[in-house]
Length: 475
Image (cartoon, rainbow, N blue to C red):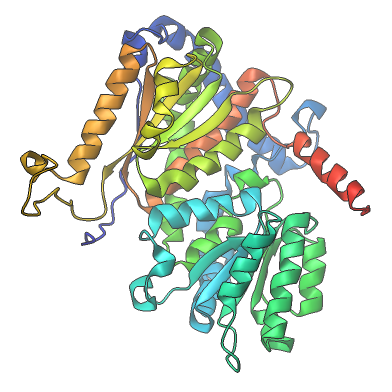
């Protein structure tokens, strides 16, 4: 049974004391000595860079691109919504999401990288498990959501197109959200053609076709021009100064979240709360700066060049993969940068824990723990026979077993000289996710400045695109 959802705004918490008291950890003196430097970088990232970006001029070459727009974005969207309501961007997102929910039962989100990973993280974390399998009533009347345009996998695309097919004589019951800042990303652009054609073949054309396609793109992009040609009445911007992997709190993530019926106002409020903690809290109590400090020192002093995000809930796997992209594209430059890896526990304790426990000591572990589950605890129970010997645990619940697994794993890692930290999430709610997204984005940018590299832009990604287009004979 699902618990009644309460409107709480509890902060996420970072616990890392074991790093100071365990073999393989770091010295408290070194940690404290680094905090003043991080406080200075906090001012650079959170104030100077934002002011420089907002001014739009005199950006030094070493800071180009400067995509600092993600930092003030949550406050701006909420402020506009407070004063303009339905005329604000947030108001229009809610209106279009409501209309899509009334018109269709399924929505296909086409996008790659940051254009879909945040939305997938929100769906998996905040919607019920197996959401797409539930009848419409149990989805609160909201559409199912599918993700494509993130690969050029022939069988996967064919499979989804087949799933969307309606019986002869029936009208397609689905729509498209397509997300691409430039409109030129081949994977997404190809998928858009294929799914638009499927709507056309199902008898959707003219004005109705335009209303079934909602683009999120940059001004004057190829996708924007295509939307004009198709007669799309609705479209939303990918904000200037907000890179793809930093765009989850823009229309890129907010529109799909609103289609699912998630509380996007609470999501943004969580991000605003994290901004304030980042900008106003003393460095010794500042979770963003603390996280940068311990990760950096573990890498520099202990050779922990692999960052393992252990998520202790299946619902958080996509969040871990979102963070993988954020860290990899932001810091993996100039021959440096930690390598991200997401593990889902207890599942991956049976596939990766052996290596984490006794392999190379080159990993720093962040355990992401949910403190309050959203459903009532399930007991082990009895079945009238005890060959498995579990009757002794019959009144023990799955959350209790999970807690034992978390404590047991952390203890084993500490004893092996592989301590880590714990990111505690009070519950899986939109407000919590808003905090986590902003927490990791801010921490990643600060660490980039600490390393002396530009955390924005992803020049390495462009190389494969150029080569692929050349091989295809496409300029």
